[in-house]
Image 1 (cartoon, rainbow, N blue to C red):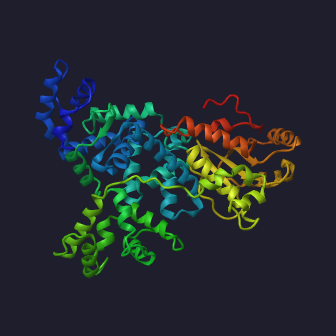
Image 2: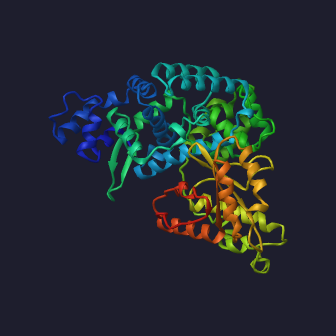
Image 3: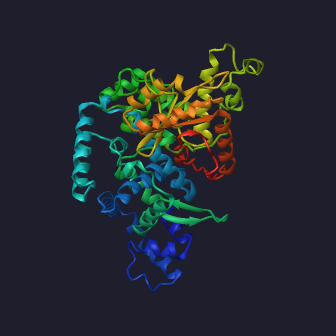
Length: 506
């Protein structure tokens, strides 16, 4: 939406008043009509490149850390990646919280021992800055930004490193609340960056006017929306490990030579502009003109012109690619439907339902169904597990972890039979484990006593929960919150012994 149209359609008088604070002088006594006229008159100042640069400097070097953290996520990671640079405020809130949780999850998966020297040095600088008085001053932030740029550290990597030292999004890895996000929304409006507009169904939207969005993209050298880049990088001419590895080498970017295709694609999206992926850095780099010609032909766009022009047309085509939500049935859903049968190893039933072809699959399918339960129903994505000596699943829980293990048995599970195994997982964890959940069909009476015994000498609680209890809890949560995308509060699992849900507010 063009900036003048945005100004004419700002939702409320309060929102209108707030955005005039940026460049309209003496706005206190103006009526709504006068405020709109003043905004239209000063519109060029809002989209002016230097004004935007100054406004952004005041964001990244702000005294308030919530502004430094949330505003860039709000604008760069969410709105600039949306079709027409707009989204409902409800979804913006949810996606910011989801993004912060993803960073926490990645920080738990990205271990320091796998870092290169550049990353280790940057992390040392971060730890030193935070260690001074458990805060980052404006001067320290300014220095860190210069070092980050010098080292070629991306904003995402920076956030992951901060999360590893328990400082992102907030202290102890706490994600921001919707009320905190709304305060940043007001701040961005007051600084003339975003507008708030209400549609005919009374749904409020956050909007980046096109002129502002275009200058922000220019400022940050953003050539394409992330969803478009995902489409582009999966096209056959660049969907190749050796080609992506060569591109990363030409870009002087470190990478794991044994990494998967998806890993290389994500790294390229994060670190390499699409124009360099397609056209390279020199005349002999990238795809040859003939390949680019064929690609343009397949997309039914203009095939004439120089190599650079063909690259620009392909990039523009994918930048304009619209995101379409499709309903797809998760293959894990069927396993969740027979969750209790997997737990108690009802082989006859499972074979009749074509769930199993051999008995060995039962335990694995129980684990897969549990991952589905946490990810899709309780809305907490399990962490990526590495190696073989680990529990069946791990979740990020603030600055700690929650682990679980599935025990598929035809009889009651005795905790004593497995406590050494669980203790090893807990002790080998690089982060403190708040709760270790054991999911089984049922438990022996003495298992509760084992939980109490373990808690006497350890900081980790052990929760015994049946598959039936966990499934019922997940279904109740999903039914209650199917329209609001709220994640289940994992703190409810902080119980020692047998699970009780009497105090859980669904």
